[in-house]
Every structure is written in C-alpha cells, then in structure tokens.
Length: 392
Ligand code: SF4
Ligand code: MG
Picture 1 (tube, rainbow, N blue to C red):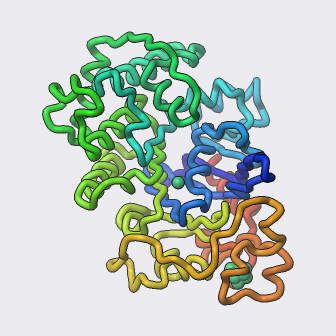
Picture 2: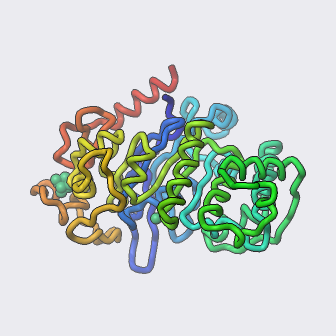
C-alpha cells in the first residue's frame, strides 16, 4: 500500500488572552491510500484541531506553527516543482509550503471533511439537492479552470462559514442538469431512499441520520482522495450510527476512499480502522495497527483507556475515564516532562524531567511516546526509508 499523506511534526497553537494553547503538538503520522486511519482520544485531546489543520481550516487566533503535511499528488508536484522547489519531494507536496490558493483548491477535490453536526453543512433555505449539485458544479469548474479557485457557492461557502464563523456570501446559483443528476447519484450512493424526490427537499425535512448521509454525499461531490470524518456518528442513535458506519465502510471498500476517522468511541475504531493513533494533550502518544494498539499497547494512557477491553471482539463504546484531570493545554501549564506524568501510574523521575520522544515497541510501525517502549525510534530513518520506497 502506498502513502497518500505524511504528516510530520505538525503543531497548531491558539494565541489567546490567557496564553498560548498548544492544541496540537508535534503530531507525526502517515496515512496510506485506501485505509481507514483512526484518531482516538478524549474530548479536548486535539483530535478536531488536527482534522481542521489537515483541512487548512484553522482560524485566528489559531495557527499552524510547525510541521509538514505532505500530500502525494504527481500532477501537483509537477506543477509546483519549479515555483516551489522546497515544497516538493518526489510525488509529495508539503501543503504548508505552498500558497494559500493551492491549499484552497484542494479542499473538496482532494480532501473533504464531514462533521458531527450535519446542520452546519447545509443552508436551511436551499434544497439538499441544490446544495450538493452546487458543490458538484464548483468542483467541476475548479477542475476545468484550476486558477479560478475562488469560485464558491452558497452551500459550500455556508458550510465553511458556519464552521469558521464568517459571513455567508450571497447565493450565486449555477446548477446544470448534469450536476443535478450527479447530486442524485451521490444521494443514492449514500443510501438515501427515493433520491429524485428527496433531492428537492429542504434540510429540515431530513431526519438526523439522513442529513448525515446527505453531508457525506456533499463531501463526495469533488471526488476527494481523502475523507476526514470528525465524530461522524456521535450525535446519532445506535441504529443510525451503524448505518452511517456501513456507508463509510462501503465507500472505503467500493470506491477505495481513504478515510481519517476521528472519534472517542472505541467500538467505532475497532470496527472500522486499519491503524490507529491515540491522542492525549495534543500529542499522538501511541500509534500502530489496530492489534498493536488494542492488544499490545505500551503507553500507560492507552492502557488506561483500553483497560476494560478484553479483546478486539469485545470492545464497548465510550472511553473509560482515567483518574486525574485532562491537562490544561496552556503552554505555561503543560510542564517540561511527559504530559501524562501526573496521571501515570508508572511515572518515573526521568518522565518529569524530559518529554519522551517516540520509541518503537516491537516494530517501527508501532510507536509510543513513553520511556516504557522498547527501544529508541529514529523518525529520520523511518522517513528516509519511506522516501526511498516512494521514489523507487
Ligand atoms: Fe508514564 Fe513516564 Fe511513560 Fe509518561 S513517559 S506515560 S509518565 S511512564
Ligand atoms: Mg472534537
């Protein structure tokens, strides 16, 4: 399997009146094409900000302050290698080193995102079909004319604006018959019954589960490579949750979608994911395959989360609370050692003095930020191996 995203040392800070909030710190991971990669953690652990960082939707006072987000796209690499040589590495392009308009042009067409609250993605005064058709049309126009990345529609603008609390642009409608047909196909793809009729209904006429599916359909309008799903089923009841997960699983298996799935629900992770990263206090503290993390975890935080999980077949739902408090992410309160030290039953003196780096546990694929992991891990070497592989 080939890597589609390489995230290296990603840090996102919020500069607030109370001080600097380290929402995401030094997150490194790779996402492989057609896999479902899960990010699991308690609320406030930095999962959503990681997702927003990947989508370049972090808004002031937040800012991505460090790292690289390398996306594999041969055509993008070819188009940028002369103008932005530092951004290009083989077929990979560092999205944080290219102009804002390049990143914006990838939103929807390369990366798409769905949220917990589908209402935020739809304008209540337009039909669902119109909004999906508009999204299809925008992406088609952007593809036909990559320079006109400013073209936006009411619904796309609405979903971004409700997220980032800016204003809704006046509606500019330009739906063609073929984009309407595509919208109906997309509604059908996500299992909306009677999509021809449903396309003409307004968001309030949809149930929560149906609107969730419609949001997935809208996110697919630009045929993205990577779908980022942030707590996509949290607000839904259990039956509907299962249906939405089925749809995501089908997208993965039938059209080879790469999915980054963010959740605090261990059952969802166990059911859906190939590999997992566990987040705590803005960091990935352990990552590996599902089996590595569920059955052979080494980080005491992971152990605490999964303490009640007997095996992969018997995973319950919610995370178990761990004794102690989730740390403040204010820079001056985070301390200089391991962020988990004050809750960690295994904390040693060195844990308080110096933050642990990633260390490998068994394989280089299974790593943990903890002194208890087997042996030191060389991310430079791992990346060099990746690069050698990527260019062969
Ligand atoms: Fe616990 Fe130390 Fe590992 Fe941190 S580094 S999780 S304090 S053992
Ligand atoms: Mg969240």
